[in-house]
Length: 125
Image 1 (cartoon, rainbow, N blue to C red):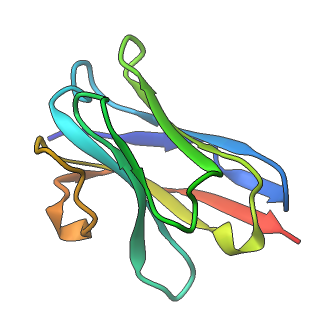
Image 2: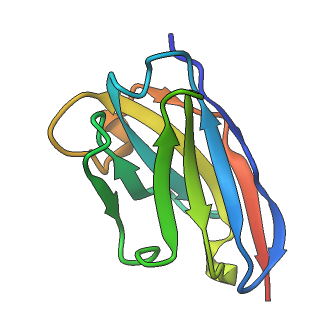
């Protein structure tokens, strides 16, 4: 069992930035692909981006491309979701998740083995 711990959510105004962190046990990130998801009230959890186990590739959906950046610090066992120019429609609970190593990062929630507890991001207009 791999435990992921998220932090960094909060309440911000539109146009501001937040950085979410996802902590994992040692050597976890190099054994799994990582996805970031979000779930708005009354809606399904959806994929917004991910990074491969090697760190060589990142992926983003159109809704966040150019505003969000995924990175990781292997030495600190931390992954990050940097969110800039936040919009009210970005309001959601954000999750990091791990999927078995493969060439691409899966977009379906069913493909993921481990999940963080989620962190709330609220963007006011």
